[in-house]
Length: 341
Ligand code: PLP
Ligand code: COI
Image (tube, rainbow, N blue to C red; front, side, top):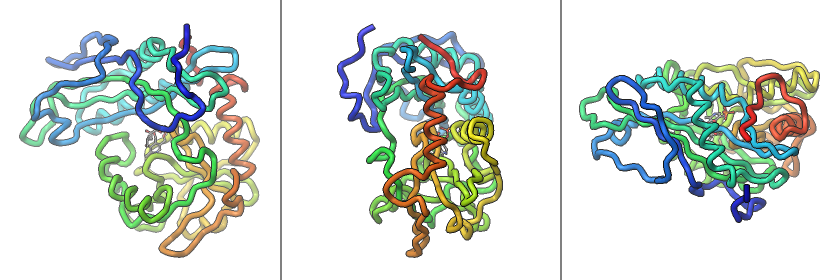
């Protein structure tokens, strides 16, 4: 199979349409069998549930070319399970996780020419999503839904690749106790747009959101979880019911413990103690692990000892091991890698 003529090394995180996308429709209480189609556009009624009341959820995962030339995805079953959780919370029908994995596999296979080559630094981003499509005017769940999967080749999420980021402690809240912070609902991202535009206008790369109940604990950013490293090399990550349960973070904790022999801790992390950590990173599918060099809390600078030039040593080891597993250079734990081609 010939690869598309794309400048893989210089891709940013943007949308490039690929040849095929997967569509399944939910109507009369059941999902149809789904199919791959060509048209990237969607026609829907002006009163569709998604347009009026934002009934939409999504997932994000990547397909990689391994060193020995296979195309693989990383733990797609966990994305499928998380999408089931998101659907339940927004009163949407569940698209079963096994069908989700199958749909991802079909879409990636159909767009194999767009999976960036090994060593290019780029990957094929896979975006499954689901939304209410029939007219809804009273506030209630839609009756009809569409589940889709498209793919797009991407480079690093943050411009500058692995240069450490500067964050600011946000005055905006991302999630409320008993709200929707733990699921991947489009509404969580819509309400973060003003906060991220404000952060960028003030010269910051991202926001650090605090827990909205007490504003003392570290939650996450708009699109990634936090991972910290203590001066004695313990890997610490915030425990919270109002952050997205990142698959990357869960994988990194396993890698830290079982591949690198490090102690790991998932617990409340207070803003006050961030100054005592040695390293900090943002982890997620898009972010992979992006190092943080500085966090600004209302004019007060917290400078991580790992500095603004490069990743700290432990974050670097985590990064190398995780990406090594994803690209087939390091043996993966059983079930983590799904070979597609
Ligand atoms: N937190 C938020 C708000 C996200 O949007 C994402 C991205 O999916 C993550 C964390 C990281 O999750 P994952 O590692 O499953 O991609
Ligand atoms: C992902 O990492 O897949 C996400 O959905 C984050 C988003 C901000 C791109």
